[in-house]
Image (cartoon, rainbow, N blue to C red; front, side, top):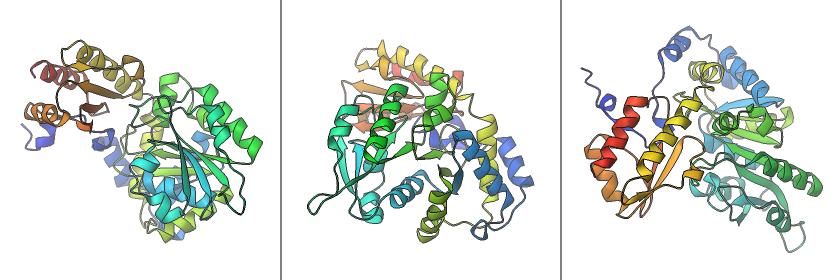
Length: 344
């Protein structure tokens, strides 16, 4: 029996908790390395070229985290004092510790949404021209899938409308696509069919795609050139980063299609929990690998009781718990999580 306590837990706190696979360890062992800050780590170069091709953009840059990727994008698209339009509970606002104000110095105009999809008409109405009195809107920020809405997908017609609006007003569009591959797999389309509507995208390797570390910022060659300056400025330049990039190559070439398994298990779990007294799930919102469970009891108390049974999750509100399915959760672990809930 393993002495690693993590092996005995059903960890549904996030899809960031996955451990590297054996093929990732082997890829790391064999990876040709250089100095990425000096531009000669061939494994990083290969990963960046693969990412750019996959999302249909000119260039890409490997960074340590999605937060850094998003904030570099804002800094590249905007000058200090410019305005962005963004959904009111977006990750960029909610989970990046005010970085858009501290680093990019941008003004954030927020809009409500349904499942992370802002009304296109309201987006257009909120766009401002710069003047002596008002900050000009330079960027529309989207999040697909949407974290706090429970992994919901922005419909493709909305993505198309945002692009049309942005072009009409000379505004750019950035996509926080940390889980864009989840959105693509759930819709049965290529991720490039989503990213065709944006000027830049941040995609995360260390969530559903299973890498231990890293995100990719993709955009035009000119933008990524500026982004490399910002990465260095923020301390994100890494040296023999090919060790990590090797895992990213495994993620992009072999870990995308299996995301459907996570989605299927999330739906199975959601349906089972929704049938229990004292718990409810908006089943229409379970579109990818997340399940938000609304409770009659306090979320922290329920989370503690589940942890005592070896099931980990995260409270996201006074009476709401989040469960995220990923590659370390198989059918048996899903059944364990359901069984733990039935014993509360």
